[in-house]
Amino acid sequence: MLSGAAKWWWFSALAVLGGCASVQDMVGVPRTGYQSDGTYVVSDEEEKLACRQLEGRLAYLDRQIQVLPQQVVLESESRPSTVGSALGRMFGGSGDGLKATRELQRARAESDALRALMIRKQCV
Image (cartoon, rainbow, N blue to C red; front, side):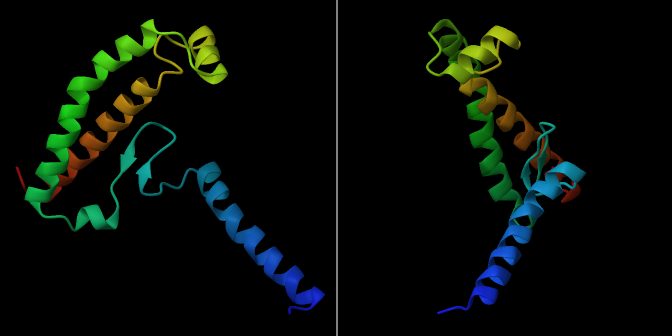
């Protein structure tokens, strides 16, 4: 069993560490993955991928980029399934609040970042 002081110390440490991710977002320090500004930052693991592996991931993303616009149209013609998507459509652009739009934006951002990585690695 931990004493009261030890519990308080662990709780404080966890609170500080948990807040680091939020502070990182507020400061604008890029982390790997999808960014709040719509871009994508490649991870160390992705940096280590061989050119052929990057080509495979890009082929998958290219298929998504081809299919998702059709899903955006279907989704926009259907009724909103959540309050958030309804509000996104009411107060945002025509594609706001649509899951397919968000997925398409993410696929494009990741594709752009991986293509830039392939150029840096001289895969092309």
